[in-house]
Length: 279
Image (cartoon, rainbow, N blue to C red; front, top):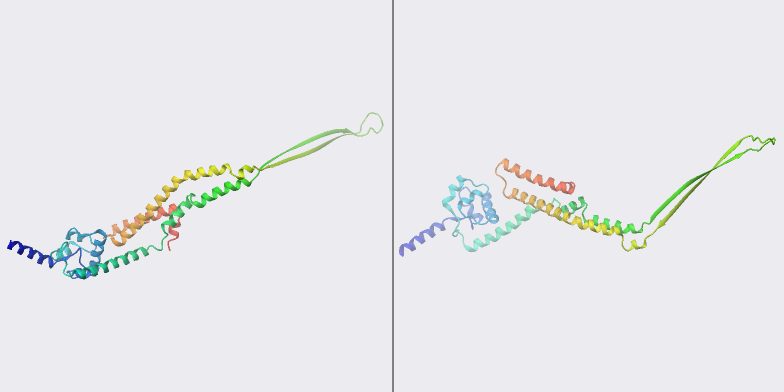
């Protein structure tokens, strides 16, 4: 039993001298050889986003950490136990870290304040597809206004009459000097205007317009879902590019091209509105 206590004591002393990368503050992390303020912040940001480190080897997933650096500090770090600072100090620094994280999130989101909002993009997509609320209201309004237009009927005809006559028999010999032909034209036009007072209450075209609107509901729903998905997938890719930038040129190029592809799709769905309104 005495030996068991001794082993536990030695283990505790061993862990006490190591830095727990799951709970360590920035100042504790910078005490490690080769770990400066930048790498310490990367560790803190990584565990806030991804959760606790399962093993020290997970540090290779943190930007700035290589196998050589991990090998250099592996004997001085752990993923369990307590760090060398007091619990009160750790809690204070965690609160400070949370405040810093909130500020960083706000700073990241402010980078996109120059871009149109999702509401604006949805509105323009519906408008370009002619299935927005204003278009619907215009259809209904024109159908109702048509009730005030009368039905007009117009018809006409033209008639011609000819009369043949003879000039006077000057010498009474039964011989007429000349014959004459007279043509008379008569033009006739008739018009009629009719109002159907029943259509002032309900015009048949209103029913047709309502059917068109109901038919376009599914199209409207699919368009909104598609635009929303593309918009936020693009935003996620932008944030990921900021927080986890690729380590090589090829990865960086692929990430930027993906964002450009999504931008072009939003432009196609909004008739170029998205790019035109990036300030």
